Image 1: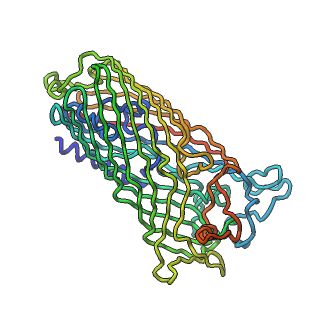
Image 2: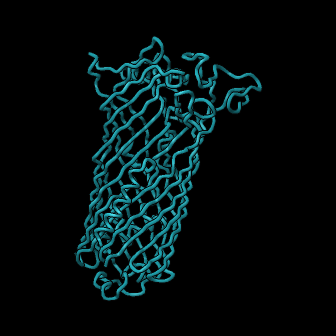
Image 3: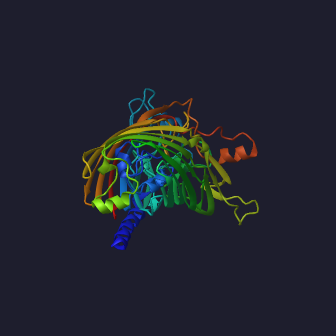
Length: 542
């Protein structure tokens, strides 16, 4: 029976994580993984509800009752828009275009009262249109199994994913003739195309853990996750500065890292029968992904100029570490049980917090060491077909361009503090529980470095949830609304430059770029919010 249930649950999970729309991010997460934790505002690190403790507090593996299997999934709806400042005609020029190009262009300032796909400002220039994410909802499936082997020892294993959205799309796909043009808004290339057109990020962690309780007052836990990451980014680069899209080069990076280690250590103490306190630390290895870069020059022309595939490119990004603290008070109906598995066999019911408490309240504080992430680095291998090792692409008729061998993409993330408060009320102990919580997080990126690949802005969240127990089977639901505060980046404060080969090569040689400094592309107003739904199924075997 156990084998059939486990295989069925594993099949369901693999179906979820293999679907194209299930890409999850490895970067900034929302509170929190697991259905019950989400309904409590993420305030669940000291409470032993189900095997998801493997992720945040493996010490609680020694405090779970009996043997449990859980299958859970969030579905996150991510609404985000960017209204880039500036005007189209400020940057456009006729170079590289002709009248047969299928995408409309602006060669200079519009005349008074004239409009071409959008509204004009007081100077008569075409303003950049607002661009919104149109990526699909992001599932976050999790499968975990836990077994309290003895009074002192608990073990767990599972496949876990970060609580994040990793599939975003900025701009539309437009079919003209037999070609599809990506990143188009209001009939012309998106103003965000130099930052991002599409990102698909999938990271999941097969994880094992152990919890040990040498006595009834304290428990220790350790879990190890073997992360597997798949990364796909699509944006536009250029041979020289400017935004004349006749010179735009579509850049597609597809890379993978099959070993991203993650280690979590935690300790939990119970100084009083009604009180739990925990502390934990999580460290995660850096992403060192390898894959292909595909470049298509003259992408927005009627006919593209050249497609170049460069194998064995490297994507390197440091990852945040995390320190956790939690404290929980529970109004208990009965004293804390030492051996809940044996007691459950005698009583014929599940002996846990839902059965033996009236209510509880918990506070969690999470500190993210995001400042470890300063840059994303992309490196190209040497071209074996050229003595100088450079890669060359035909950027325009008669204008070949050498590609930089390395590229640094600044992010300048900053440390982030998350405060989470929530609790459960057992309306019918052992049968029906409701929960609620609130969460708040500080911003995770330095001012001037906001961009569309990640938006870790300050946010506040409201969370609700419930669990219905039918015998030994728990059905949990949760909903969270996370509102991120708007960010406006002025032209003077913006720090993200356009990626172009001329500027990068000039920097490598220590000389001034021939066409001036690269265009700054991230000035504007950023708005974003999340709606998250979650369903969790948990079975208690004994």
